[in-house]
Image 1: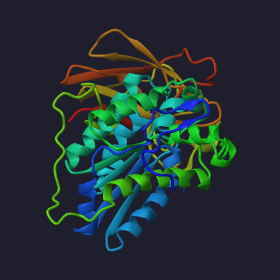
Image 2: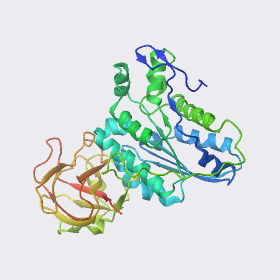
Image 3: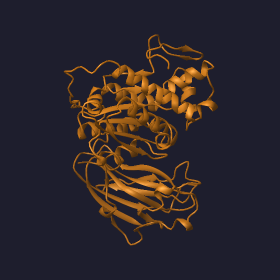
Image 4: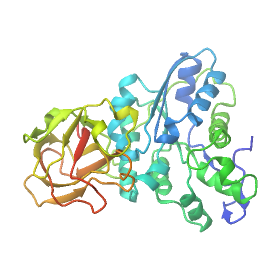
Length: 392
């Protein structure tokens, strides 16, 4: 295991002397007391397919069991392939916090915010900061760890001495809230450039066991740095106080699902399980039995009243995904394209925002399917698994 704090000057990837790819920031002591003294803990993982797969997540779970053999752990696996930090912020309540008090939370969205969502800095911060603030409101003693996984685009940026946009944005959040971060992307780039292994051996975007072990070992280094000595007899849990002014006041800390029944629809809409056998494109099993709000004909419309600062929809966007026109509070219309670059052969899960950074309070969304569509699309459909809103 490589020592924490090792400065790297390897190949074209340069790290300053003393720089580490394990950013400690704090002690994770609340989690240690919960696991070691109270002997009961809830550990959750949220992210995309890297978290959903049999990879670093079960390795970290095993490490925790070995460190705290007397602890009764509950582990929540909340990875969903293709999803980004925006979707994560809105599904956090249902997929993680509803499972019980949360003690240690692992977050992984850098790759999906980069290659799937193509997020701006603002979008990266709104999702990640929303996750952090929501978790800490749910349990002010919860510990959080962010891990930055890697793709080839990110490695190319590091080699040009640039920090990939999602990592830079997520790191702004981590630094602001003093959250430990694992710079796996930087570590892997440096070690590949040093000739220790290649991208194929690492396993690519979805790492092989070899690559996932590197990620787990870096997290293990964080555990060593935080939990290496004896727990002081005087150790006591401490609340994390949220800064009253967030990085972005429009972050999704109050993100939640809004029932589909809140939409007042025209007759063309149905809330049902789509007839997947009749639709082009593949689907993922986790979505096959979910009721969705579906319409396929131009002109289908609905209105929805909500309280909050943002509204959107968590959808599957397949080969026939259309475009919608939206109006908020009777204002100017805006066109939102539901089709995604990966929609051609897959009903792709994504969250699209219809209104954002709104004045807090009561609002009305009007939505209508358009006849005009993306040139690559074969239809004008919308299939929403959930409506999403940022509001208490």
